[in-house]
Length: 142
Image 1: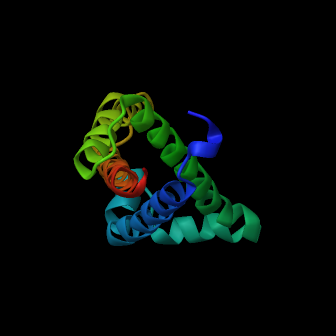
Image 2: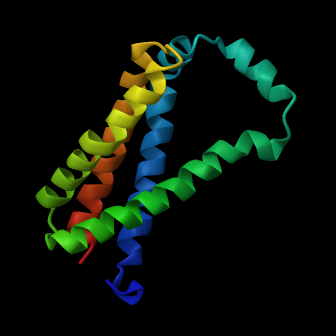
């Protein structure tokens, strides 16, 4: 797939939608997520108070850049599969999540003995991200 053939509007739209989904997701589940991390809101605020503004913003910037890359890769996979539709996009997102994302999260959280709820919350977030990206790319990608 030549880079000139990529539908960048679909990639950017998918990344923006996924980023906003993450903001809503983690706002909704912030208390549960912090509990799964074993931290309180006060602890996080104290830790962040010592950081520069850029350091505190960096995870949000990194998330957006990562989601652009994820959307590009999903677009590339869908191009190689040859199917652009709502259904194929969501199936592609689900299979990528099942094969690569949730498995990686589970392993990475198991070794440091993190609470299973952290994997559930983060894993469900990334499932939502990939389903949203797949749907958007599937519908407007071609």
